[in-house]
Amino acid sequence: MKKNRAPDLTDERIAKILETLDTWKGKLTWELLLDAVQAATGYRYSRFTFAEYPQIANAFSLKKDVLRGTLPHERGEPRDERVRAALEQVSRYKAKAERLEAENQLLNEQFLTWATNAERKGVTMDMLNAPLPKPERDRSKGAK
Figure 1 (cartoon, rainbow, N blue to C red):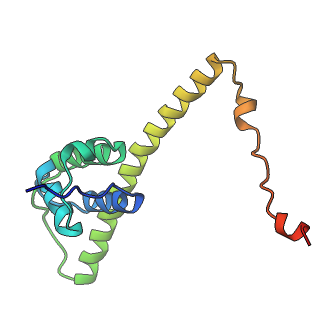
Figure 2 (figure 1 turned 30 degrees about the horizontal axis):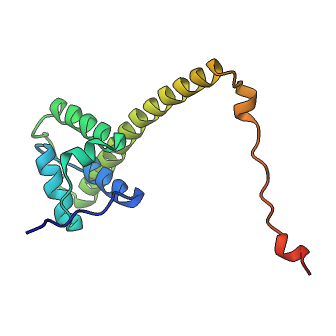
């Protein structure tokens, strides 16, 4: 019996996976993440598929590091549900901010690599920063 292949990861699916990682609590393994994504989407992806996407692989590694540094039980959890919900939201935003900062660092490194390689090939920063040509939008109006 042939297994059905999971659909390609779109930006929307990647965002959902990153959101799952941002809100993850407890033990995190690739297998547990794959199970959670399968439960949410109905599709089973492989660890290797996720590893091909730097956003997912980096977010996974960062979340593992964060989870290793946190205590399993925090003292003094508030009783007020609204306060707990606000603290959970702060935690999600903090995790997302940490992931985005790490992602931004990688993009800055990639940009520096591209700029250096372009300069070696004789492409100047002025050439790279030149504005793009304006698209010709009103073609059909001129044909009146």
